[in-house]
Length: 404
Image (cartoon, rainbow, N blue to C red; front, side, top):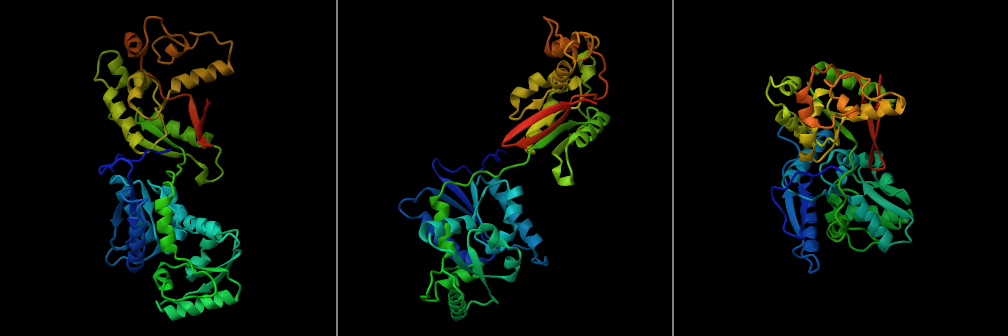
């Protein structure tokens, strides 16, 4: 679970902040906003919602109105909402359903699902329905948007050629009913205001905007979006050790395609002061530089931090209490691997007390942490073990060490 940025516009206690992306189809969005206002101002909901509206052109001047441009517009708006302290996003746009899953994978905020609202309404108010008529565009039909969200129903389609004629839409609804549709969903945002003007037909015609608005204000806020595990790496200590570590993470990840590999965030910062020089009293303290680098990784939504530098681990005890994510101690996991693989190995046999790993094997009683390393430190070699492979499984991070 990734924490959202701290709000710069705090909602009052008990108030939910809803961000409405309303620049995609301005006229239909006005119909939705009216119904959202009515739902949020109802006596049971009054004072519970702070609505933040973002209405601007979905494409810049001269930019083609392509699906990719729509994605970028929505993503920029989501990022803006996150910075303003919005808690969840409302996207009243059928055309965006084709990219909803992809948006959810990268969104910093949860998006209230329009299809989920429609499905809950049908199941709660029209439980005997088996055939659903859909009036939508050829593009949305080809993308199988409604099949993904309504797999339990038989879907009957009628293509809409455009326009806002209530008579034409009524004729379309009559045609769908004659083919066995038991209810009809206007599957284009432009059709929703038209549906209110067609009069009575033989089967129910849903009002997606009103259903979505009522769902947003009556249901609990959607959960934050799930995130794949991301490993943050403090790089540049030294640069060659970082490259070696990344190569070994790559080699030991059980991936069959590019998308199976771990997400990595590397802050390559070779300007961090020399760790060994400071430990022997001949250089500046690198603690702040290491901490600042870790904070950048934390801000970049890393779940775990790796530091492929033996000597840098002398400073972890000072840094870790100030972070919200753990630093994986390379020395501890390496020693654990050694003890598990060679249980008869005697402590102290690996080298002298000049190497940071020695205190994990057999610490001197009176010397621990930075003080112990200052007492007798020698230059640390390149990263040579304790390689990490991590994955998220059922919400938990599993780790194992791999030595080469």
